[in-house]
Length: 223
Image 1 (cartoon, helix red, strand yellow):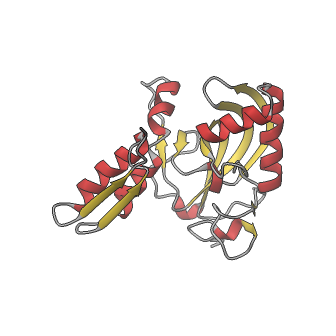
Image 2 (cartoon, rainbow, N blue to C red):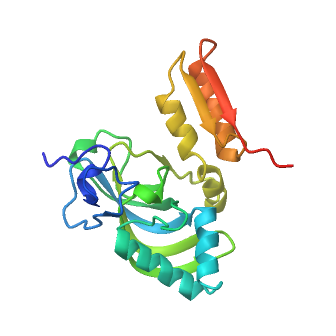
């Protein structure tokens, strides 16, 4: 089997020896798909709010300039990882191919999913930007992306409008990871526990750590 690292280090180009998220550049060459990767036909990039605000400012509010900045970032880094804010976002697309090592997953080619891992670690290639929606921090594109073996995702429900699904799932990645890693008796500290994602993380941490654990939330006080 042609297996890559479950965490995606096999696609890191620069610097070697780091995970995809902090990497300066990763491979978005999907000519060969590793057996433990999932290939996605990307429809929408749901850009992190801080990142999109910075890009809009840099592009003087012009959607064409915003699109060009995003194209340049992905071309240089192999991912939508804003070099100024350090943040990414998430994406929506249809499954194009499933590696042979992941065929036991409840997933089929053609399923529409939202990735619950950051675009800052997701290998991405943009062939064309179709539309920039500055009012909702979204970009419609034609392109492909890869989800690593340990990457989490959500099937988009047919009975829920896409905008609503994205609003709900936009902050779902962190709580889902919290549920995955926290064990009974753990001591958990959530930095930034006052926001939507932070509160959901605290909720999951309390459930998973139980009465023998300790959960601490840290949030900036304004006032």
